[in-house]
Every structure is written in structure tokens, then in C-alpha cells.
Image 1 (cartoon, protein in one colour):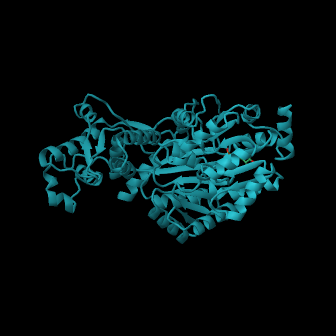
Image 2 (image 1 turned 120 degrees about the vertical axis):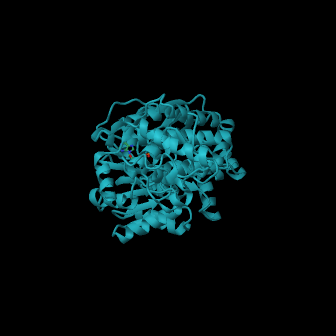
Length: 524
Ligand code: ADP
């Protein structure tokens, strides 16, 4: 019985007692020669889903993976278990590659890892034609999606596997799970016949927290020192410069931080990655270039000091925390500037209108998660089409945010923007608008004579922080927009009118009491 054989391999080769979640059903499907689409969160155990069928079926399991840097580690781990594995990629010299090819043709390999660009070469295709293939596993299958940040054009070529080897089962695996991405994978990889296996995306041991940004370095430092001292963690930043600055800052504070981004040499990146994996308590400060395929079970926190561009990205990145199942923190600091900056980046992006609209929709969803007064986990899972009740392990469950009627405050902001434009033909960024509302006599206010505007000083009842919160939420809700000139100045939208005219009440999220007190103390 193939099922018993799989069970035996699980125990004897891999040393595990039993299958987890959907693993058994997936293994059965592929062993039986059927196609499978596997959606399983990071750490769920995707590898066994193709490794075991490759051992049960005759021939070699060919694994397509974009993660060249990790192939050596994966193969070494398999060799240690006695599985005959090898890889083909650009890090090898000609002779090493020849030896792997020979072993494959001689039927001496259980698993062969290949980079997609390598697989699609004539030489490799001809090699595969001459050997015996047990299955094709397409790892990180979401790389086929043109809308995601991991898009790899070579993945589009992988539909040829089905054309050339229609009888060989294929299994596509990913931890990225929106219905949209799933549809794209099915269509682009010609997986119409595949059975879908969708696991729960909940990661109950991760505590989600999204805080308002005020002095982000200090906030980050406090998080590390007070809650994660000596822990391994990842800090995600949007730009390389910010990675460098933040890593240097943490080092001056006695934290073992290392930078990682695509601008560093391959040698430095690989050194930092292996230190992060092997040493205890290293904090990796990185762009999103870091992390795919990283299997470090005891990452205790993932911190974002800039807002990710999409919920999928956020989920992927935070998913690297707590793979061992023990409590872990996903912490994100976000503020007005994140919203302004990302709206601007979308406007300036070189893509066409469809691309931009898609990015804007992704940003909206991310903003929705940041501003929600509901359970974060409920919201996150809903994004992936899964329903769940309040979790009791996120900030909104633990310290429910309050909402307040922000209609009048919103009207003040909108009319300030409106008057500047109507009466003066001017547009300004958020900081200056807040100064006008609070009646602050800055140099710029005097220079433009903005103290004579009727809205000058109408908002002295709220703190600067509170006003920034109002502006941020107006931007998040599309009641204000960043105009298209690229300077981050603010403009009204179609939807603003209803609020200005008093036809719509606006409930806003109030920052937590503690944060409000702190910001008040800072200002006094
Ligand atoms: P993914 O690729 O989905 O992120 P992996 O395949 O790397 O996950 O597996 C994550 C961890 O779980 C690995 O350390 C793996 O050895 C372990 N694992 C997978 N399946 C089982 C199982 N059935 N029983 C125990 N541990 C498992």
C-alpha cells in the first residue's frame, strides 16, 4: 500500500511520528499520480508533501525553487537523512553539474533541486527527457503572480512541464493564499485538474500589534529591550538606507544587529544570513530581500518599522516569527508618513493604470488592517478568505481601541485643504496643515501669511499627534489624497464632499490611552 509506504518513510527517514494537517492527503494525491495545489502557511510542513512522494514513486522528484542560496542547505539536510539529493544551479562549476547530470541519468537521485532559469534551458530539458521523473514540485508557486513582490518571469515558462510530461504529477506549493493568487497559479501553470489543499492560515502563537509611529527607533529599541532582550528577530524596513541606519543605531545600543539588503555583496549577505541562522540572539535588519525560505524556528519577533505594501507581504514577513509554535510577536509601527509615501510611490510607479489600481487596492487592504478596531487576526484571516472569531491574542483584543466622532475634526482638516487651494491656489503637505490647524506661528506660516486664513488655529483643542492621526485616517479612508505632482501635498477627493457638507458622520480610531498620554507629555 502506497499509504503505508509513505507512513514508513515518514518515520524511518524523517523521524516523525505522524503526518500533520493535510500532509497525508497531499502525499496520497501525488503518490497516486494526481496534481496538487498546496496552500500552507510558512512552517506548516510543505517540504514533506513532495519529498515523500518522490521517495515512494519511481524516478527522481524534480523540485523547482527560486531560492538558490538555500539549495545547498536543503540538499545537505536531505543527504544527512540518507536521501539521495542534489541540485543544479549557477553556483556550481561545470564539473559538479556534469556529475549531478550523470547521477540523475543513472537513476541515483531521489530529489533534484533546480533553479527555474536553469530548468528552462535546452540542455536541462533534454537531460530530463532522458531520465525518469517521479514528479515536479514547484515551490514558492506564487512567484508566477505578476502582482506580487516575488514575481519571477521564468516561472511563466513552467507551464511547459505539463505539455512535455503530461503524465508526471505536479505539485505547486505556496504560503501566499489569496483567491486571486490561487487563480493565477492555476491558470499560469495549467493546473486545472489539480486538487486544492488549503490549510488554515492562522498562526495562533503570533501576537499581532500595530502601533502608531512617533519616534520609531526609540519604540523599536524599547520593544527589543523590554520584551525581547537577547532574542533573535527580524526588523523590516522599506529602503536600504533605512536598513543601514537602523542596524547601526541598534548596534550602538548594544544589540547584535546585522544589515541585509540587495545592495550588499553576495559574500556579506551570505555571511549575515548564516550568522543569523547559527548564532543566538541576532537581530537581522533587512529589506524584504531577506527571508523567503529561511527556516529558523526560534525567531521571537518580527518588527516592521515601515508599513508593508500589502497584507500578503505582511503575512509572509510576520510568518517568519515563532515557527517553533512558542509565543512570538509581530509588531508594526505605522504613521501618517507611511500612507503619504506609499500613495506617492504608487503614483510615481512606472506600471500602467491597471497595475497602479491593483497596488492601490493592496495598500487599501493594508491600511484597513492598520486602522481596524476589530480583532487583527479576524481581519487578517478574512483577507485570505478564512473566517475566525476574535482571538484574544492581538492588541485590539487585549486593549480594545476606542472610537470617537471625528466628523468635526475631519471637516476642519478638509476645509483647510480646500481653502488653501480655492483661496490661494496652494497645496501643502500634512505637517503644514497641522501647523495651520493648531495655530502654530512657524516660519512658513508667516512666509505665506497663512495666519490670516479663517481655519488658522481652529484646531488648538487637539494635540499634534491627534491631528496626525486624523489626517492619517482620512488618507486611509480615501477622504484625502496625495496629489499627483509627487511632492506629497494633500488634495480633496470626490468622497470628501459628503463629509465637508455634514452629510456623513465619521468615526475614527483613537490611539491607545497610553500612547496619547505619552505624546501629550512630550509636547508639554
Ligand atoms: P514550510 O516549507 O511549509 O515552511 P517546512 O517543510 O520547512 O515548512 O517544515 C517546517 C518544520 O516542520 C520543519 O522543521 C519540519 O521538519 C517540521 N515538520 C514538517 N512536517 C512535520 C511532521 N509531520 N511532524 C513533525 N515535524 C514536521
